Image (cartoon, rainbow over all chains, first blue to last red; front, side):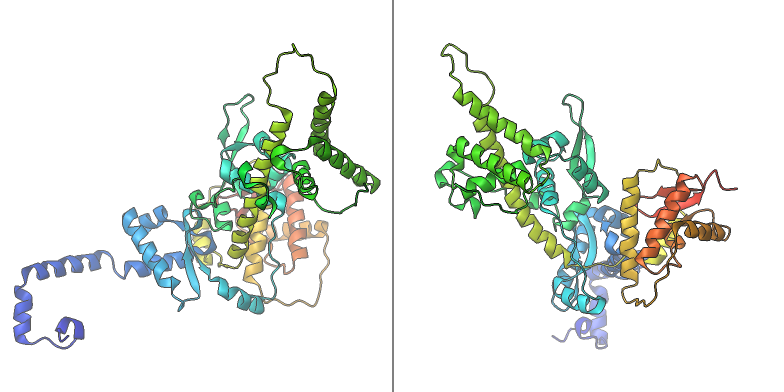
Length: 219
Length: 244
């Protein structure tokens, strides 16, 4: 293609005349000019910069939309674009939106190198008791302490306090049942910890049917 | 038959029952309550012999199992109306199946959790925090120790990330009492409101953070300092009533 617009060579006079007489094109240039004045810099780059600043705390799309003065729809498109860009193997970081909070994280391939740089890090283990309790809350929320205890057959009082202190669950009002017990639900931090954008992404619960015999019940 | 003592850790009575059902190859949908009850009791006995403390939850479920067994032994009057309660066996099977579901799915969740642990991020940029500082309202909250614990965790994590390559050869020993004196001496140079990070600027080991933390807990108790935790879980201090 020898289009001056694309190749960047100087336009000939004939081309210039043709250019300026193409009204719709002139109008589009005007619009683009205005946009550039109102919004200096590439908005995607601006968003990327903001995402860098917020670090591990992350930012919600709603907050970003206000900051970059774009609609939610536009903001989501921008976020998707950045996400797509960083999914390339050219980059060592990626944009994640666990629990609808967007942040840059290093890709998992970086981890072994990070350990070499910083020294072996102790993995933050979760006990089976913590995992089971969290799973029950995530699938059945909002749920009361008594319901959790009935399901696991053990007291959940201390566990719920610990999970609240770790910000993995929070109180979500009170049940209408007798005594109006506190209801619990999982937090964005829970979704972040388990790589969930929404709770709909939770894996399906296994189903056990009598017909299957109980062969794969304990696999 | 002899009962082999296993030092397995169970997450509760239901977990133990699932293990016994599996071990005895019982059909969970057509549960032989007698074998289950006998094995369950045998397990609790073996724990007793090892002088292990049996948690009350295990005894609660034991009571259910024994109640079921005793009812079966008693002759039932034919004219006795069937009660409306769910059959204890059906209820137990339902609970076991339900519990099994969450036990299974929590393994899948754990895999995602481990994957997430490999993705690292950096703290919020420091300049932004400094700007944020001016917006903090100094509103007192009733000190819930769990909130403070949460905030402390965050501070420790940040510090860990900010000084990953620090190498130390010496160890300074300081008591919380001495630390209180140090902090009191520093107070006159500090602004009205200051963060926990400011207080531990001169610390460079976990031990010193902890000593400082204990010191400020003491000072808060004596109303020498008041603390506030903002929505970002930063701990802020100002001088309390007892500060002359």
